[in-house]
Length: 517
Image (cartoon, rainbow, N blue to C red; front, side, top):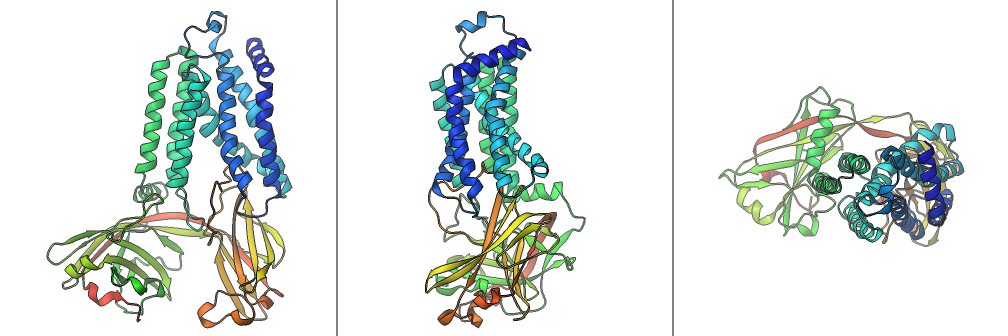
């Protein structure tokens, strides 16, 4: 213990200026976060969320490089250091000068937004564990296998920059979709475990070559996991981890209702054909609310032609020659399987009957208690966090105003949370979901360092020439806010079940949707 404290105090005296250099952007970020009342962050906060982790990584590397482990000729090797004391001093430095200030900043943010610290502390400590797993732990492992700080900087820019690029290019999903947490957590877990192994191996044995091999293999494995965990694979994992007992299948419905507007082909009829198949799930889920993942199907024609659908991902947009399949659920009580087939391929298979086989996943939604909030006020929502409503006055004739609803929580907020505006005097209601829309923004806009998770929605107010009409029922008359109340019902993914798709003898030509319907 005395040796560990001696090394710790020595590092603190030598690196105090670098510690202060990381506290300044941390204080600026917490100040901006404390005053933010919107889901979308501005450019300064976005850049701080990107640059602050890099500053933490550099400070971690500097304290490790005070006694470089990969340099066999460094003078400290002749000193009577025991590796547990040396490793303990470095870990203590990172905790005291990085994690504790970050925890204090998080406490200031959640307190400014009205969250009690006692209730918030488990979530805040969990966030520090995540920072250790994805920032300080990997940075310490990288510094332990690098001979000099310049070597670390090159490796850090490549690895952290590559991770940020992958997360932004192929890992970002719109706020109105449920994020695939498994695709994020598994690669991060691999890197965290490998970093811990490298740190212990270097400090206890100084096996630099072996440690570098472990680090390189873990980075490659994490990249393969991130790229290879397709939505279909993660859906199967969800079914295995949280299964529902029923075995579900899909069949063609006997009824032939009118296809929903979602499938209207419009001006793209010359490029592809839209098909809407009314389907029924057996056994019927009953009154349970559920979502179905985008399916993977194979269409076999009467003469053996085969068409396979693709599942779009954030990093891969489908082309005009791809077959797409999707579900539209509970449209006037009817579920639909939609197909988008290129015109050239459709001309080859529409003469005969086809067989459609595939699989998907049914995800059942669990609902919490509904909380009512008067329009223009806020309240705590059990099972969610805190939600605020605010009327914003428009600046031109086409934006008469908005009723914005913002929710904040210590844990991720599901976009399945339902928001409903109800006016008893008018006898009308308008429904939204948190995160159901987002503006187009440029630059870093991810607030992943914030201790609070936020999502929002809005109700568009309209008056005068833009009064609500049958074709634009989503518009809300301003007088609906007088005496209006907002109902917020938390929602989350519950159990999952595999869905087998097997439709035989289907005449696709009978289900083609045109813009004239």
